[in-house]
Amino acid sequence: MLENINSPKDLKALDMSQLSTVASEIRELMLKVVSKRGGHLASSLGAVELCVSLHYLLNAPDDSIIFDVGHQTYAHKILTGRRDSFCKLREFQGICGFPDPKESKFDPYLTGHASTAVSYAQGISEANKLMGNTFKSVAIVGDGSLSGGMCFEALNNCGHAQSDILVIYNHNEMSISPSVGALSNYLTKLVSAPAYNRIKNELEDFLANFSLIKKISSKARRFEEALKGLLIPGIFFEELGFRYFGPIDGNDLDILIPTLKNILSLKGPKLLHVETVKGKGFGPAEQNPEEFHSASPFDLQTGRSVKNNSLSYGEVFATHLIQMAEKDKRIVAITAAMPKGTGLNLFQEKFPERLFDVGIAEAHAVGFASGLAKAGLIPFVAIYSTFLQRAYDQMIHDVALQNLKVIFILDRAGVVGEDGPTHHGVFDIAYLRSLPNMVCMAPKDGEELKEMLQFSLSLNSPVSIRYPKGAVYSHLENSSIELGKFEMLKQGRDICLIALGAMVKEAVKACDILMAKGVYVTLINARFIKPLDSTLLKELSSSYKHIFTLEDGNLPGGFGSSVLEFLEEEKLITQTEVHCMGFPDKFVSFAKREKLLELYKLDAVSISEEILTKIDGEII
Image (cartoon, rainbow, N blue to C red; front, top):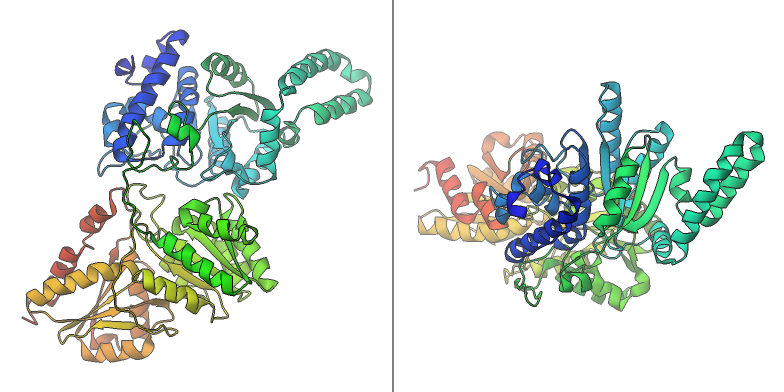
């Protein structure tokens, strides 16, 4: 049946009784593709019926369907003309793993961060109102997104403005790791209360009749509100100004479609609370949804991953942090709903009382860390580079301005591969090196990461340490770390190459290629983004006509820019030519990391070719 659905119009032509077959076939296709290519499987499996129902009832793209985060959109993609190309999910020049307007008119936004959808939906709704349109605006929000401040702000404003939107709250008790927070606990208890729907329905029938005499006495309205507060747990959303409906089974089309149809006919802000099963239809994903949140390729029969089990940087970080915490009781760790992703689940097993998971609330994580540091603890805040962007004001105002000893661990720095532009961590060099008091470091390998973690304890200022996604690199040679001092790895007579962090690996290979061509390179491991090694930079500028910088971040405001700024300030820029290599001033697409390095000429072969082009036969 799915083979005949090339757009939502084809779906609407079906009888409602046929939709469950469509849902099953969508799940089969998802499992077939994701088992080979990896992807965000569990949440997309749980949201199949939601996607089917919305496209069955709405008229997208005139009606806007906006997914928060974008982890749950695979069924949406399959139903909106991308069924045949879905086999190229997350592949270079294939289908993006998240909604993408460049890919389809049915995707209003490219979304990969949480808590944004309600704001988008309200903006579209108010624009429709001003332009005289009657289009619908729907936001699908996961339970983890409700812990983000932006979502609360949007709900509050929607209720105040009485914007005509529908928020579908998809409650599956999982964001990435299990959801945390008072509201999540409250809603979980609500869903598990067997008497809730019976009492709610009886109460609403009573209030419908009771409302006929509301005008008789103001006490009647107060009595109605008191009853709601006592028996309707949705009063939280009602008090924000929303009409609350649910909870209902979000995987039951016979319940979901009639309910949605009725609610969509109403005006003003509405919230439908649905309960879905994350990983629905695939046993291993239902039993272990966290493992299948962002799944590596796996065996369809057993669910076992076929990923490389090499040691990751996150595991090196967490293991060494445990060793440090055993010696220093002041050390605590903070994660924003990513204990497993950052490796801090290992720390949590050892020190459960010293691991704080604040949910998808990065701004709060940093403000919270500020308080811990002010009180005398040493907080390590481990957050993916792309998500730490969401706490930029807190890093400035709450940490750097106060000069507090908070140590930021930036996992997934640089390009992260198939997740694409919403997840690449290519901006942190620029956004952190500009902060006064901040010390910024990047290790070349796992051993140097351990040294930097230890070294950070000796500083009395904010610190950031960035490292890439993937298996740990080992360079074998390591010298002791001193504040603001680079490390010389090779000494050569012809040119100088200064590589930062993960790019040292490519730089070493590039040096070997160049040496085979008769070009001898002085290779420097920068270690520090801030402060720079001013003494060594002065020496290098007087010794080499050509200095190359290499980083896995965006060039504007990046590490190369800092070297240029320093040499200009010291009036040394005329002594040498500085060539900066990194990612250009654009959003990087999705592909395997190795492919992206090749595309942007940051792999070893391309680096060596770029160097040969710039020196243009001067050395050979």
